[in-house]
Length: 110
Image (tube, rainbow, N blue to C red):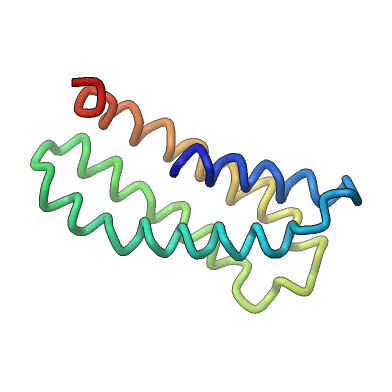
């Protein structure tokens, strides 16, 4: 799922300059839905994993949601949207994804 979200954000970023990518707004909407699902599941995951590093990585997702909220009510401003997606949301998600994968990969490979 995390790879799919990252690919979706890459598509949204490309859609700002590649006019053939016409579904940027719909894909961004799907990203928001996925962010909401992760936010809802994180408290349960924090309960399941007692390790502080995993809990810290899960809490780090708050940075991603903070960046997404910057777009609330401002999606009609394409310049602002592009700036937030490219400079804030996408980098925050990629950073969080790397951190959570580092912590969870030992559980996924066994």
